[in-house]
Image 1 (cartoon, chains in turn brown, cyan):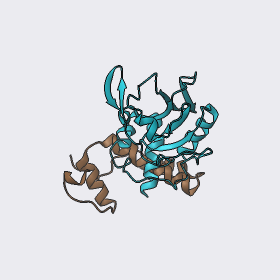
Image 2: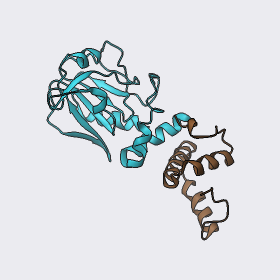
Image 3: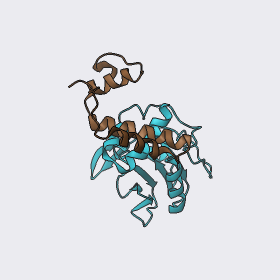
Image 4: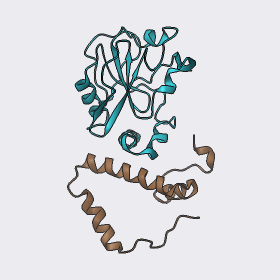
Length: 71
Length: 158
């Protein structure tokens, strides 16, 4: 299943507000730590390496093709 | 940035099973000593050998339940307090919800060739706090639960 790039979150305004609010009182370092944890949590939830690789690319990461990039 | 992900993995691994394979993936246990990391607790007492805080753990052949094995196989999967000789009376040390499992030489494994003690400069009573990624976080000449708790907190960048 490819990465879903269509709107998929019910109440998108509400989610965006919640996301921003969740970091409102955090320092830069705390927000960075939270972002890292969030990425790891959501990546684990997705689990599909192809989908994750596509997301890494679209987000602007430099990604080698194929499974060999794994270890 | 890799440092931040590393810290995020270590914090998550204390509470969530999903993050533990990431700790053990090899990415985090590269043989690069993090001897300058602020996550280490500096030595208070003299130690010889190379197992300074921040160093990836040396292996040693051991006996577990009478069977030959390797020390590294007993480390990881959360924090471990490795005690060489002189077992303390407590079974675990915890900082909040992050626990350190006690691993005592003579009780949980036998250092059959004395190599663990040699490699860890382990006079009886020596205690090593080992991170989930099999790196030394801190070490002491005697067991002190409060010091271990503080070192766990520090290793979690708290």
